[in-house]
Length: 136
Figure: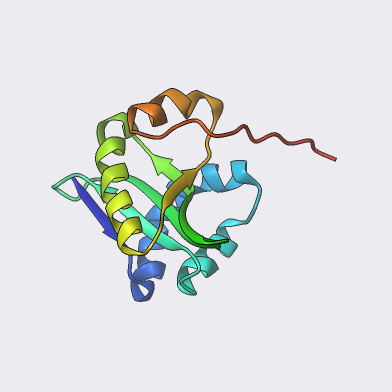
């Protein structure tokens, strides 16, 4: 399994394969558009990651954002898409945790659909809160 952070100068090329997998998560989150996510990756406000088999078959993609909070720094997994996550989620979580620690972070944070809670627990995450919305 390969986990690779896409360098800013390669974002445009990688985006063509990443966007279709990220689109459902970005649309569900309702916090930004695909175009805004791309711009955040270009400006290094977010990081784009690719997950692949050893033969380079793409399994998943995700974005992260490093967030400064009072007396701490957190790595927030913003958007996640792909297939067979149960096969690679634990290993990717562990590798991402190492990267986040090296970046000075004290926590990994994420949110997802209700059905993903059990899977995330299997990867070492703990349930923290519930996100709710009311459309106006």
